[in-house]
Length: 418
Image (cartoon, rainbow, N blue to C red):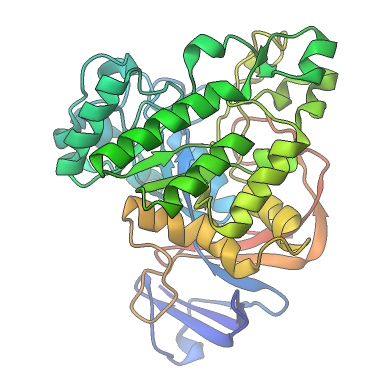
């Protein structure tokens, strides 16, 4: 298929026409030969976004999401590459499950799916999973997802073993003995009468992982950093040359624990929403380069699972279709960062950390791109989402950066029709 994108403005300000042929960016050809032509006047072209931390729920939890609906939602958010976590049923801890995920992803065809395998069998923190066989099958990283790697001994084994296969370790940092709560520990949790989770629960585990990475001289990636202490420790470790990278999520730079005052379960996260002090620290970490990536932690749940008491409701929100707009509205518009920095956070750096080779817009590169309307405000409507989940706290938010077009490998995967 031949596609022409006329009057394109690239995110870095360059203006030109883009030509796509046989799935890659090509040299100019006669526009009359194009199968599709788009006039992108007033729109901005970005490389396809890369989400290094999400949940597609399949296999096992298809009532929450499927690979098809999840990647359709990702495409609507401008993502062309997504990396699902292994907390499926059965757990993605062996090559057979990896192969099944990749087969379903190929059939769906809406995004490139790069599975993340489990560190331990059944995510139980005891025995190493089949890391080598999963690498051969196609995983790009390992993680025990919402469960921290249980012990320092297991962490060392995981890091040393995974380094032989040149794949990164992604860890959810949480000291479980301190985290028997349902929201951030502080004034709001006290007023609401809800058991809180102290920031120390996250900070202690981040410190452990940094110490191990420094001792072994092996990389570690910290998932969804939400605390001031976590940002500080990663910043200091990087200054010492420790091989540590980290990510955060849009909800940690746009929302605070004040939102929980309504007991709305869409504000229950894991790690929990923090105070403004921590939100400001996350933004500062994004600005100064301490934080390497913005991931969605897209976590769809069935409506019934989110309509119960705050103390026992499942953690997490959907994030594919709001992530870019939140980044642009809350980071670029207020001049915290440039649009080029946002591209680093949502494309280049995730691709680099996971060695995906994504992000090129030059002739010969895979034609993965997203087109956004940066000028016009829109109101986000959860009822128009393509994900199965409706668990978002951003319904009704006024945002900038609505997706106009997404192309993955020369295939149009999302197009705004009206």
